[in-house]
Length: 325
Ligand SMILES: NC(=O)c1ccc[n+]([C@@H]2O[C@H](COP(=O)([O-])OP(=O)(O)OC[C@H]3O[C@@H](n4cnc5c(N)ncnc54)[C@H](OP(=O)(O)O)[C@@H]3O)[C@@H](O)[C@H]2O)c1
Image 1 (cartoon, rainbow, N blue to C red):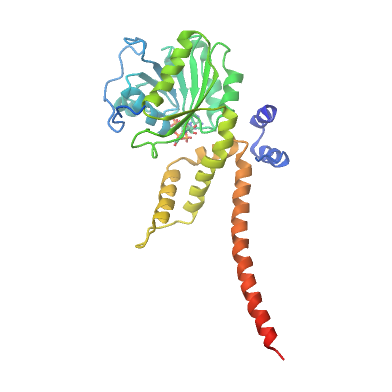
Image 2: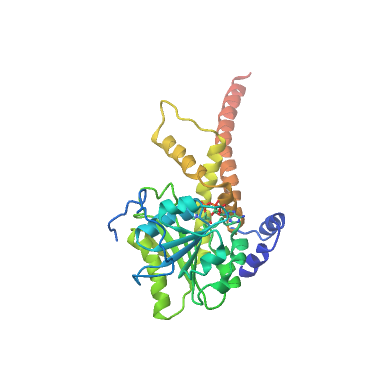
């Protein structure tokens, strides 16, 4: 399967579709901080100075919707957060207490302990390859939060120097579903490559502890296992949300609880970019099978209805024929 993934990463979209088809792939609770109002502090003057060795210096690469969402909580935990993105987010960063860099070399020269990749799934390979890793400390921890996991895992293993640590994660929530806190929300992680020294294991644990101490349900599982489960749950959710969005559903004076759930699903998924949804499809080898299952399920429900209707009419016709002389 690994060989298959490596091959697909280098193919055009249509060839990936052909390949997928031809391969027939199935398929402690704690004090909650006010993340809507994080501490507004000025970016630290010396972004490379540390006064508390339990705190991390985390560099977020890709400071869009999700990167900013995570940054608020990191800052509220007292970690020093640096950020870089394709667009200029200087003002947003200032509001959040994050040091913003318009130049990736400058950011890397701050020697962050953690590089957190928060780019779109589609741009990740390009962004990763463009990072001046030679400017980083030799034992930097690379983390990603992409909604697919095998893809960044393979990219990291392929492109990063051997002495860098790798942690692949997926917070199973976003700015909408996590807006009232992260308590009870799932956080998936896979320690793909963490050095055995105490300093490395402790750095990784301190990063994970941000989520654990927010009350997240910490789930350790392999990237492959994540992608399998996520296609059958998260991808189906996004697909249903997008499908319902096309129906342009509106509120009525007699909305049922079930209908309200549908409307909130549309609201939840419509807030995410189409790039994100497309990434879930293109970079999870299990997604194609789920689209096909979706299609088959709809056809099967229709068939069940029409078969019953057909049976009813048949009965009527034969009853009528019986009465004929
Ligand atoms: N939203 C969620 O609920 C959620 C939950 C869990 C995980 N995630 C993951 O978080 C990541 C970010 O998601 P998102 O919601 O912020 O939306 P997204 O549309 O998936 O990604 C937006 C980010 O990608 C960057 N980007 C897009 N195209 C780029 C390019 N060609 N070159 C360089 N950078 C590029 C953007 O940079 P600029 O803004 O500077 O243009 C921005 O930082 C994704 O990998 C997603 O799977 C999202």
